[in-house]
Length: 207
Length: 207
DNA sequence: CTCGCTATTGTGGGTTTCCGCAATAGATGT
DNA sequence: ACATCTATTGCGGAAACCCACAATAGCGAG
Image (cartoon, rainbow over all chains, first blue to last red; front, side, top):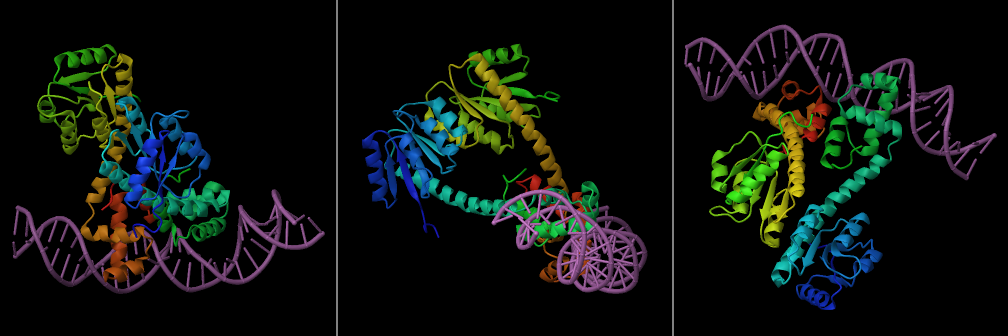
């Protein structure tokens, strides 16, 4: 259950030495890793279906670590990112973490330290993906609702009675009932309460 | 709307110079601030009803900044914390931010920088308190439920029918109806759907 | 022991939900 | 023009919900 498709660790660093030694380290621990010599190269390869964790050097030729990070997120990749830096760069560390990086590690680092971090990040990623899948599924079902149905659903969730919804929308109660029924069918809920709980369990789907 | 009760900025630093200059700076910008010469002194004063933001030095005699931070959170104070450090301490910064600090600033810092940060932190705190209030209110109403009622509510939220709940709990349907009614009254909802939406809007109330 | 709280169950009945069957109408697409 | 999709509405009925009125029973507090 812990590793049906663990995914890979992607190492982005313009120094061959670091990249290769990290790749070797991970390989020796049975972890799949892949190196990229620049932020640009990695970005060009997105989307990567096996991206479970990203290790990103802060200072690089071309795109910097933080710049690459932003672009990666912009490309829709939500995998946890571990920054590496050779300099005591507190402002960058603070900025990166506040922007959503998973961790920020100073070189030189201990082998076990980076492996542990990567493992934790990958575990987090697995959890995230699970939730993501459910969220995507729900969003897909929700996208199948017509505009009118969305409207009715919004009112349903406030606990309004069909009668009230009908008055509010200026339509017959029977029409609301039909919408309601379709909504429940499309969303896979047996009643309004289950629908509310379902939507609540997967946040970020508002509006 | 932005400042009915802004609260104070609490500055914890064992260096009088820093404390006083910060206090003076904030005062000159019309912000109420109060200094504390040690983590211990501040902790002894908790709970502080006017705590809108905490500025905390990392290295101090006695309790360190991080230690104080943990104790503050342990004491139930959730105000945003801004760490100050005179040293390029990346690991501490990372650790602090991951533990929930609001920001981590290196000395020397610009006057406008710290004031801006404090203002943002206080704004965040105001938002947090608003939500907190609603959450507390809901929690209070929820606490008024009997054990049996909690049990019935949990099943209600899954969308179970009264009949099913009755079977599950081995009681009569009528009894479930009574519980259901009491639950809705106590929680201030008109029906199960509204209850579900209500509970969903204020997370962190599980279990 | 009596008071108060909670849990429990019935009866009867009004209200709301949910559905099948049927039909009209406008918008879109082939 | 014809098919498809969505919105609409009516009728009638089964199932579920909600509630007032009433009553029994156990448990801890005073």
